[in-house]
Length: 472
Image (tube, rainbow, N blue to C red; front, side, top):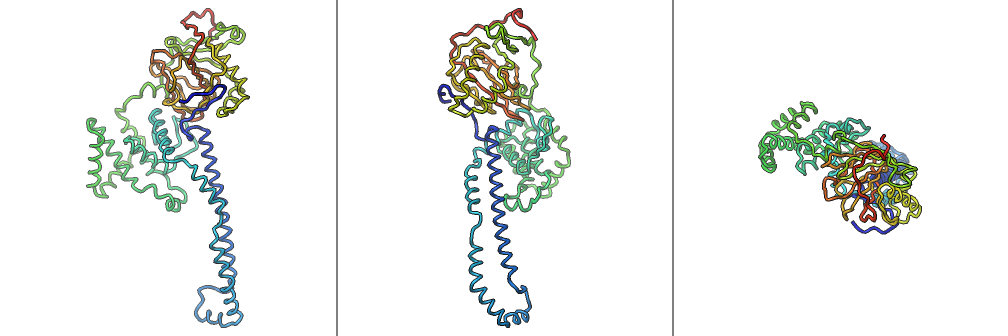
């Protein structure tokens, strides 16, 4: 991570299409592409209409008998008109037919395609989907129906989406999930204008049955023979399919597809490996914290005596605390508005207030020239890298509908985003307070991060009695 200049608000991003802002730009790009396609087709339609007008202007019927054709050219007026039309009009219509219409739109489409996601962007998106499915234990049959963690959404992945997800999982050797996505693709309802679209994009069902059979066989072999390597299982399954007749393969597929989706999922999940502590935290499966202390902090500074902060001590050693209602709506919107503005003079008064508030909360002296980092949908593998801080404050700028928790797996603590709240933890030699970030399932996660690298005053925080605080 590079050095940050003072008085600048920075935005971190993993991938241009990994944030809501980037995805909105991508959506806008697709809309502009479609608008240009519409304009182009309108011009093509106009040209077709003009050429049809020429066809209609010819005053004789096509496919006449030989006698009628001789009668037509036998008329001197018709003969003259025929010579004039073929001499004067045909070259002009030929010239018009050769003109390329919609050049402006075609050039615009070229520019859009140049900005479209590349192979690495696609690989990143596939990897993120795979990560979501594993962390939250999402089943393909539910996702294909538009359901995420028992919540129904108004969307359905297309057959090409299902195939692409299945192929990626097949590539990374997750044959259980691969087989279910291939199954969903096979059972997908036919698309409207499928024949026309397939002529342009290719038929997504090519090799689909074979891929489904392969993934099911490999998964079944490795599950029944845990000591067998995937390479060995692949060799056995490929050899079996090569020797099998088309009728045998069809019989296998019919048998698999005759079972319900729920039956297949149940059978495949027998003896399934349990979730990690990180995955449990992301899924909200940790038990409620014991001895949770909720107080109003009004003793740290003179300011807090007038305006106490509501705080929850989540853990004493190592120390982790959650402050509520630290940022107001106006401050949050300003921070978002200037998240990538490197000359945001307007934000400086807000930064000053936030730094003062941090000092009141933590009793840490932090220079007002320090940077604040505004991030959007950042993963756990990225956000906490860099120079090791002595403490970290994580401000949540939005509620998140599903997912997005900050998890301390070793302490079995999960904190889900609450708009305006602030999570604070000390960096110690104790690795138990190393946090990880869960991916967002639905919504958008904006956070403001302040890493404390120097502390002029660090008051030792001890577990004290509640006599100096008001419990709520």
